[in-house]
Image (cartoon, rainbow over all chains, first blue to last red; front, side, top):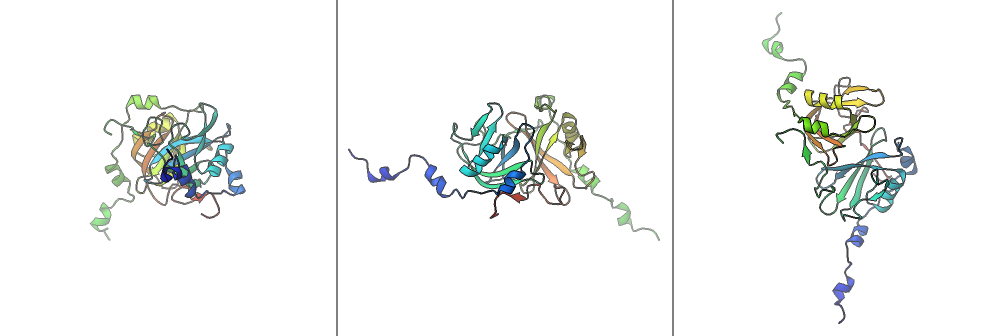
Length: 138
Length: 138
């Protein structure tokens, strides 16, 4: 039995939709060259939810993962524990799409405002990794 | 000529007012002991403006400066460049008062929501250190 036309035209995932509104940020060669990496070749990166301003997580990028992040329009970190490229969401499905990208006054910390896909940024399933408060009253 | 009573009663700075609404956060010993420091004895700390959610800066604390931060209710970092305690605002006057404090799922990154005093967090005079965007169109 032939599939209905509507199903033939549907895409299995939302990937193609995401590509349409990707609006890739293209850093200048000077900006990329100015980024200061630590002795391990890594720079700390803060991911902030563009929807509500919540800080989602802090992780690390090397030069390769930073270039991939801009090229693909989604966050690609360097996993220090696994010592490998970490294309955020490849396993969990909870990708982070780049919307805005900043560097600080010392060019040694980066801030990305992202569209967080799925349940959240945290491996625990929480929206943000910073779900625990210091103190006993919180 | 005697000073008017109103001027006699005025405090020269807002320090005493700040003390009144300080509401210190008291971390538990377990929480402080759980914080994971890197091989230099430092943990990265994100300061976020509680007024508007802007990420102001990322800097580092050691165990001593973290304890001072909670004891004084204002951000005390460890300056890696100067290799000394950095009581934010002692020189600039732009102190950061602690309002909320979080740790992430790995307890290796801290997030403080602060009331930013004065012009801003950045030594350039900017409100946030992340005032530069990647790309040419921003």
